[in-house]
Image 1 (cartoon, rainbow, N blue to C red):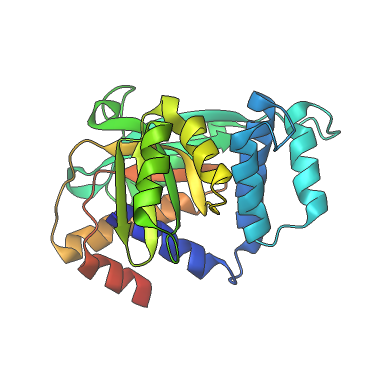
Image 2 (cartoon, rainbow, N blue to C red):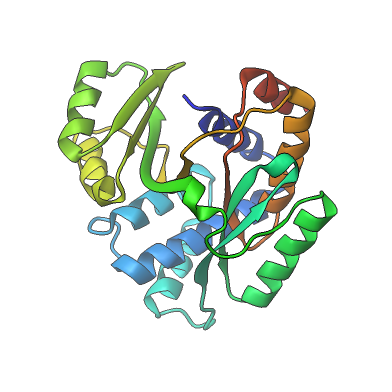
Length: 251
């Protein structure tokens, strides 16, 4: 499993019982609303919505909150909040490239908050296209492989159109083209596999390796960005080694 995915897993475990549960609910609610807006409010026919609802349930989000988020996305909600998805580009210290995914109802606030964090930590915003060329958008799936047959997982993934499958520490990762997101998801769902994380991600074409101390400084920038209400995810081309992960997990 890649360092980025291990870090995502660590964050989920840390966030499962911490004081930021409200922020987690807000982030997942936005994801649900967007998925419902784009593909309808039925999780049985909208795979992206199904994944978002599963994430909400895993975070113990109340059923009423989930239903309100779906209605907000389909236009049935009464609060009138309209979210838009915007990807910002920037740099952390040491030239680490960042793609910052936001879902916001106020783009001026979102870009101002992001610019403030990057400036505070010695980074900066980038022009459109200045960073994006270093990444490829891809479908991503992660789930527990414990008790599952790896050969069967390979078969499901390949039949769905995936490009890469990896296994480590009872976890499986599948990466494929954007066009394979639904087909791979359908294959896994039909096989009865519980998907823990899935979505469209920005995958770095080449990772940048730094010393542990410098990498930890970059991770602090990424963590600060991820704490912003409007930020859904932050992608970087930083190579996250096991040494870095161990220090991050211990904090």
